[in-house]
Structures are given as C-alpha cells and as structure tokens.
Image (cartoon, rainbow, N blue to C red):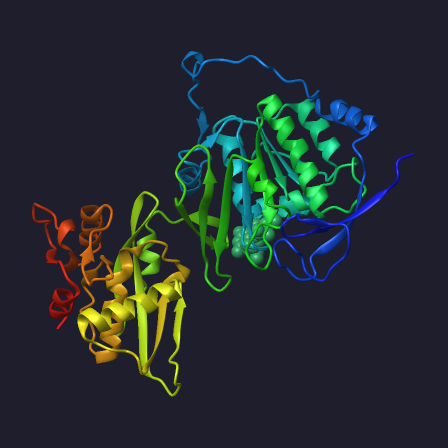
Length: 460
Ligand code: TYD
Ligand code: MG
C-alpha cells in the first residue's frame, strides 16, 4: 500500500508545505495552514472519477486552422434581473461557469434564488438550485418572503459532489447553482469540506461535468476577511466569469462587480438595494450615491465617474484641518492614498496652495471606490473648498485628470458625463478643455480648463 503523505495547505492561497508553520510562505497569511492527507491518484480514484463524471480523460488531438473553425454565437439567457444581466455582459451565457463571491449575509443566496425563480417562471428554463447551507424549509421561507413560492424551481439540499453530479445527469437541468462551493465535498479526498483540496477538487469535478454536458454552472463562494475568495485562487482560473457581490452592512445598497469575464467587459457594475422583499434593482445609481443636503457645504462636491459602460454621479468629501502632528495625516476612504499625496503635491507646486501643515481626509460617499483618475480635479476642488471653508454651489459638477505638470487631462466619454450631469439638474461643469463639447448642451454651462490654475480661478 502506498504511504500516506501529509501536507499543509494554505486556506487562502492554496500554497503547500511539507511542514507546519505559523505563516504561509506563499501569501504571508497567518495561521492559515491546514493539514491534509494527500492521496496519490490511484487507479481506483480515477475509475471513480470516470464513473461519477463521465469524464474519461480522452482528448481529441485534431489540429484545426483558426479560419476553418466555425463560430457559434454565444446564446444568452436573461436572468430577469437587468443589473445582473449587465454585469454578466448581457445575460447568462449557456454552458458557462460563473463564480459569485461575497461576504456572508451580503445577499448571494437571495440574488440567485430570485434570478433562478424568475428564469424558471418566465423563460421556461429549468434551473436546479442546490443548497449545502440551508434546508429546503429555510429556502421555502425565504421564497415566501420574496413572493416566489409559486415558481417551478427545483431545489436540492446536498453537499456530496458525486451525488450532485448524478442528480444533475439524471434530471438534466439547464442551469445548476451550487450554494456554496465551500460546503461540498468529494469522496475522492479525505479532508474536511471547506479545505483547499476539497474546494479545488469538487469545483474541478463540477466544472468538468458542466463543460462536458453543456450545463450552465453558477458557484457561490465565500470571501475571507481580507476580501479574497476563500479557497485557492485556482477557482478563479477554472471558471469563465468571476463576480463579487459587495456592500456595506450598514447600508441597503449592494454592488455586483465583474472581475473576470470571458464573455463581456469587466468593471461593469450592477447596483441593488436589499429590501424586505428581497433585492431590488437600482437602475439609476447616481440618485443613491447623491443623497446630499440642498444647502452647499464646504468640502463636498459632486463628480461624475464612469464605471463600466455608464456614467455615475458620486459625491466626494474632503476635510482639511490644522494638524498637531509633525507628519500630517492623509486618510482616504474610496481613493488610493498615494494618489492623494500626488494630487496635493501638484496643488502645491502648480497651484501655489500648500497643505503641508494640514491633515487631509477624503471620503467618497456611498462606499464607492474610485478606480479611475477622472475624479482627480474634483478631489482637489473639495480639498480647496474645505481649506478655504468656502462651499461650491451644489449644482456644479467637476471632473478631469490632473497631470504632474498641473495640466488637466481629458477623460474617457467626457461628453456623455456632461450629458448625464445635465440630466440630473447640474447647471455648471468644470471639465478638461479636450472634453468640452463642440455643441452647447442644453441646461449646463461648460467651463473648460487646461491647467490647474484655471480651475482654481474658476472656483473663486
Ligand atoms: P443571504 O442571501 O442569505 O446572504 P448570503 O447568501 O450572501 O450569505 O442574505 C441574507 C441577508 O439578507 C440577511 O441578513 C437578511 C437579508 N434579507 C433581507 O433584508 N430581505 C430579504 O427579503 C431577504 C431574503 C434577506
Ligand atoms: Mg447564502
């Protein structure tokens, strides 16, 4: 008999060492190593794979020329939730594998139950919702709360991977949801469910089954405290699409973000609100990130960012306060701290305004994270407004990238941003010169600036 080999695998990154250590040598996470028994891939276990998954490991070796391969247009199903469709790139692609990650309690199960129930009811697709976390009664209770208890949705409470595949083979559902991948286990391995090896192996079997049978597979994954998908990163490589469901537990709003998508653009955002009746789509997200008081306040202003394919208005706030410290603080929520340091340096060098004896705090309202540079000018304007204790009129909007020489650089889709601001009732816009529209836009006066000093003058 082969000797049993023990290894220690990191819960977070999947790195393996033969010896236990307090810290993972690969990703640096503390106390994340778990003991696992590594069973050699014996002939019996391969047989089991073949028996359960129908995957015989045979490969076609026919080389084909790219130009001769006939393309099939990806067929997409609408999930009934337009925001989810948008993030998926226009609907759920048949035969694709999607991973949805998020904190516990953020609403992953609710989102998928709603989407699957609507799909089952309206489009005649037969989804199978497999829960390893909740009993069928709990799901029924949830469905009653969502007014979806009358939908023909098939449910199964099961955590045994081989059993799941057997049921799926028999019933041939078009979509299978596994909630969650951390609860399922395969009999090929002896380690406990939720360990790296189990998650990786179970997911691999499920993905193999989905790809060989053309079933669409949706996996739910939990996220660690650090915000990475628990379990090995290989999970992200195995699937076609990775979505993150994020949000603050203190607010009702939830953001669905694509971080990998073989069938669509990433950076696409879907916005939902969690209500007593489940998740509601928010088709005009600007409205929620803009819960401002009418009276203009110093240090607060609105900018328009672009997330994915649509512009979104967000409020940025700055607080500039005399610092008692020799090394003043630069604190950012929703913005990269280094970016702020750079912007303050440009403000000093090219605007002649110093904050070197001031603490600077920046907050992007609503939990939005700025990932593009188009908000640079707005951040500087907010800093300036707080520093001078002079409010900027609440119907002004500002955007533009600030370069190291103090020039204001254009951003993508400038005209679209100005249009969106005008739609929301803004009357003045400070924008990069290259983004100024050729034709005047009704209802909004555009102030085009080329250099930081011009923007500072415009805000006087
Ligand atoms: P859930 O989908 O169970 O989260 P996850 O699967 O990501 O762990 O969401 C549970 C939370 O959502 C819970 O805190 C209650 C809340 N909720 C509502 O506010 N309204 C509802 O209609 C439902 C179904 C849940
Ligand atoms: Mg859940």
